Length: 161
Image (cartoon, rainbow, N blue to C red; front, side, top):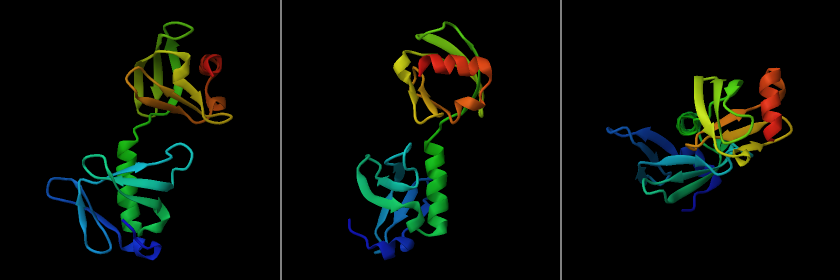
């Protein structure tokens, strides 16, 4: 669907009676059960937001969050935050073994948890100091800056990345 860049500020969102997100296009067309997804969630979070229908088909690709009204942006940012559950590891408390597969006890910004790390490949460096870890259930954990971790936690992470 083609929408002029100047019309993007007329793109609106609201919830229906069942709590589903509804997108109203500038021409008045409504799409029910819309789900926003970042196309580049790690490298470019503010651009290329895909808006999918209830079946996972792309309805529209928003070039930038800045291109919509502030009300629409607030709704989209809330929806994206709900979808992108990525706890931040603040400290590694213990590991069951020095190398994967092993269990990790960690403290995150969402509380303490325990997860299984299957292989070294589940720890990925995203930049000079940032790391993304995926547990055996597919939950992703972020370490924005390994230099801010305690010595024990840094030693564990450096062994894997």
